[in-house]
Figure 1 (cartoon, one colour):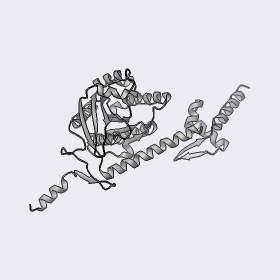
Figure 2: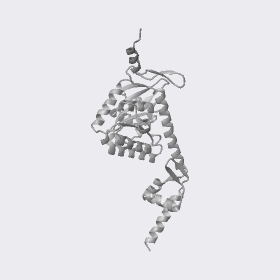
Figure 3: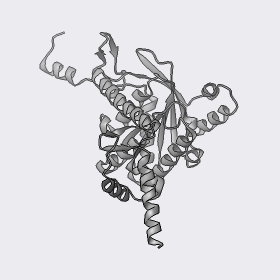
Figure 4: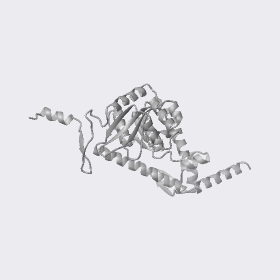
Length: 313
């Protein structure tokens, strides 16, 4: 076949179907439908978009075991929803604090979707309570801003029943059996999620509950293109390192000014003022966050007691 300039231009505008990865292997990155996932998911993402335009709070849940491609699928779904690649630095959060910060960015910059990777936020009962309380507050506060939240976690059943009572989780994508070439998922509606949750209370191996309920549809997804995949990997590594570092600070008993203020029931400004008066230096610093030993709280509490005693003379 003889190629003309027009043919060459058409070839250049076609989406690339294959890509070479750093292991030297060439893999498919796009199906014939021009997307990195099978057809039924597109229609359901459109349905979510229409619901959010009607100012109805909505959440897409993606769960599954470690290494099943949950975050990859989340990014692909977010890209599809937005109509362009999301900014991983602004629209993908790891952990609750990062989520709250980036949600504010999305509101300010009118970004339509955010990914929340829970990053072990519910490993302890107290953390699970905080995790769900934050989610409930987010959907009460941010519903009017028409932002889709895609949440990534190992098991959707940790989500608070109040979220389901409000019919906020609209679809579950359960990832499983990922290979080096593609991943697979089962898709469940809110209605069928209720059945899975009920089954999980009766089974010793809760993961068997997914097989006991027929999904609305099955699907497959491919890996992200090499450059995008590398960006996601770096983003995830940085976020998880921050989570680990903050956990290490907590294990050592170190606290931030905000944490000290909260525990004593005083303002952050008051604690900062006392730190300056006492000429105290932090034991550790992470970015702009300063960490102090537990003695800071004791010194401020003693100072507060002395002030109260002085006033009562």
